Image (cartoon, rainbow, N blue to C red):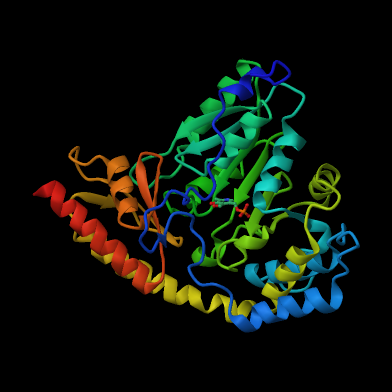
Length: 376
Ligand SMILES: Cc1ncc(COP(=O)(O)O)c(C=O)c1O
């Protein structure tokens, strides 16, 4: 291995995106990445294509200020938080746009941790990218275990971890929470929010609302100056292919993210897609009720499988664990995959994204067949 590489990166396992390539020769039901199962309507794709043809000069760099997009995001964020146009409104100065919210996570790490002894705090199980990106930057990750009854965070355990990190000389600079959390699908409780409100000003709190449109609950409007809310166009707004995420924070924090990001981090086509998506948001978000209805159907069906245990979901996915010792969940995920059902084995459980009715029906049949085999 080349000696110019940082030794800690040599053993590092990269995030495996789209691990579908060795999939079997059967139709794949992709319930492993929490995307919306519906492609954009053709009319919306046509609108994006029209912008591409008529307005985008491909020989020119994209708009590096994201001015038009930030203005429309601010409008959407105010609408979603029920904020009228007044002094409390979110403005473009409160918005930074990233190449997916993944880029914003990295900006947070660079802004808070890089170049000095630091840790981030996460509550496991949670979105793996916080720890992965921290590792690539040589930043220490401290994990506190969530309470299994409802997957909430124990504020006392978190405070103790923060105090210990300070004592050990690697103070926590940023806390990542997800609202609702992935993979466990629980929204932040009143107790957790009250705890976040007590986090001292020298720690940045990131509230990741990637699944906001499914939970319909946001902390925008309740933010303190040391909080950042991040969101994405990759889930409910059906634009995962275009990689657009955004952060909502105090102008001073946003100004730092703007310093850190690459100057042309968002291609013109991605900006056009996001703007078009926002212009058609009412139409695009109509499928949410259908997805939540399918979630109810899956919840009811999983409840009839005694081998599995599940928790209430505020998102477009369901988290399952084995009810007893008898099931090897990693094997179950792999056997489902051989039948064409892709789900995610993560955090010691199974995360199943809500698909189309047909995908969900096939998924349930595959679960049932495999669990019947185990029982038989
Ligand atoms: C909690 C959470 N945050 C962020 C992301 C990444 O979103 P993006 O596609 O905007 O990078 C995901 C994607 O799965 C996620 O689950």
